[in-house]
Image 1: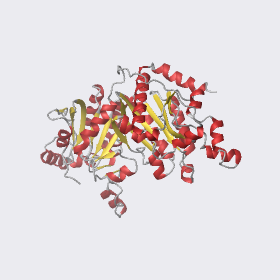
Image 2 (image 1 turned 60 degrees about the horizontal axis):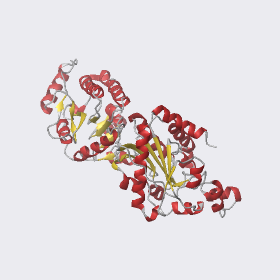
Image 3 (image 1 turned 30 degrees about the vertical axis):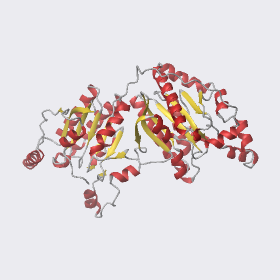
Image 4 (image 1 turned 180 degrees about the vertical axis):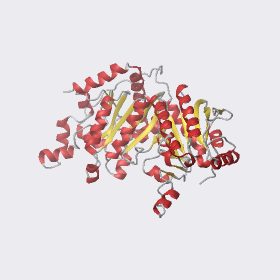
Length: 495
């Protein structure tokens, strides 16, 4: 654990030099007996501050942002009535002025000296954060050492993007309290930032010196303009060879074929990977990120062929992670890009008990009704319900050798003929390849491969990125009501 920084020191480290402007105003009177009054006086002398929260505004890479940070030297960063009032006022001001907010709690939670009245202040703070988020404004959180109790159980856990300090103790119940209540120590290694990251509760674990960088990248996407983007010329549509479906299935499975990670690395900018559901699940079969294709911002949900190859088929947690991305797109008004590349969802006891079928249904329901613009890219294998879960969109693009099928062709052959040897014939008969999907109206455009994306991965990713950028700009220009109505008509009229 690095040496603990004070609130002002942290704020000045993250913000552009000389840009910090304090918002702190006079504090409300809090009834305090003589013992508590003495504690407050000592805390003020020790910290040089009048309360446990410092608020204000500044700039990160020239962008105006609101900030709020706790001071641990002031009664452990605990939140009482005065601190809650200051924090709430700062959130409300950020909302009124249309500013993103970076919050940096470090706190033992509720101020015990003020009792239940202090405890219920967490509701007031949460209400202000919800109003800020409902205004479509980004809320970024940096959890420092330690952050526990009511602070973590309210505004500390509501970030669109949440980063932890390396080695930070982060937990609902502090270990000292746990040991006092249960007369045994809390298990080691649980309430640590790195462990929370491993369980999908944090998006990153970074030292304070790197906080400005990730905040800048995130805000570059989250605050990017949605209107008035320069038009992107459409790539000419190329003639496509009539290649058998089974040949496309074979090519889609080549290990060298570029996946969503390579696509983002080559074709996107300002990429900020997010991690897990934020609710204790992490599935390597899905990549969730903020990114821009050209000037067009988006949330990316990508089925990760590398993650699935290493860990096995994606489980229901991957779709719950995808639904986190859908919520982000809805709340922040960002286009959603889904990337399909999966040999199929997990078929296992764990997947069944985890509600795989229900998660597919909920993904379909949310995508069909999502108010944000949606764009789907069939990049490789598109097998079964795991692929269908991410397909409904305003526009659907397809790599030339991508495909979509109710089951892998081998599985369909086994059902129909009790053997897999007819898989090539089944693939052809079911119309799984890109040319068939285009003819049936399931996809809107095919991105040509020359003649196999696995043999030209960089060039292919750049072409796909250009098409994504063009389509995103078009979607952002459309009237939202007309766009959503067209999406609904699209799937109702498929026949």
